[in-house]
Image (cartoon, rainbow, N blue to C red; front, top):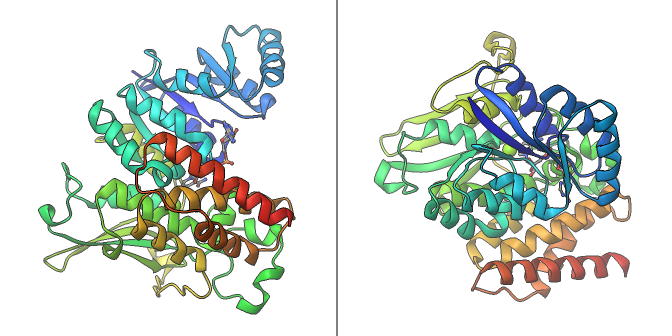
Length: 390
Ligand code: NAD
Ligand code: MG
């Protein structure tokens, strides 16, 4: 029996994780759950999964949760704030941590899990984008495990040989082929992109996800963040990571080898597959995902991404090539810009323009310790906010 802390349990990934966990009560039990503000939902999850601890974002939310839980006669301990998230990520009572908080808010708890030597199921790609070196170092130094949940990276993980050591040449790996659906605006007239609505941007053609990652998919910043994520996870330089547009989202990514072989992982677009894969690795367990019906899919198509249509993808490659704190700056500017778009304060095309302006305004620093990274993150956020309020 393994116990798991699920950080961000009310989100899209959190709910899918609980769905898989519920299918295997003989294998997994829940140590802790966390939500930022959706207290009623978290209380329901506590009733069903009986965690020892539940964490929320504020003291007010904690009081509300506490009264809901006591009303149901549940003994779950309630805590709040970022430190409590680090506590449940590093607690002796948990073997595994699902890092499924969205954005930089998930960084500290993911690092805490790594320092405590936990098996980390990593959905929070922003942690690797901001501080890839630090996180990979903490994982190595503390004997932690890091299993990718992002469908592309989980696919690549499955296509790489067991015992892969983050050196492409040592394993005859030529290239990583990162597939991308292209999102809702793949074929829309570029001239009309600034007029797209929030509703259009979050309506992903293939995946049901949280709002932030849905907008990231529409700008293709999501793929850009994933290029950086692949760099850290697999030791791949920028020019060995190729993005391939594949609108059907059936192939979740591929690995190209020196002998000409290309290995791919296929499946229906449902996050329960990578979640089940990482939970049970190296075993295979049922996830609830329907089997793939290839005859019904009939056709798979591929094309190259257009950087003119998707400037965010190019900005992410630029940040990866530059190194230092530029990826943290890019990530922070993107988080602010996406939130401003969701709040209808800026148009869609302002997202990439804003990120670009913040990236050129804030000097990149090469020494990337956590202090420098958080400082750059704060500076980038303040600069982006100032540009929006102008
Ligand atoms: P979501 O918005 O549905 O859920 C986010 C979760 O984080 C919620 O439980 C929320 O309560 C919590 N949260 C939000 N802000 C917080 C804060 N400041 N402090 C603490 N907790 C906070 O997001 P999601 O779609 O589940 O994505 C979660 C992460 O997984 C993101 O990093 C995303 O990029 C990544 N991811 C998601 C998918 C997907 O299919 N949804 C796929 C690949 C990767
Ligand atoms: Mg992905």
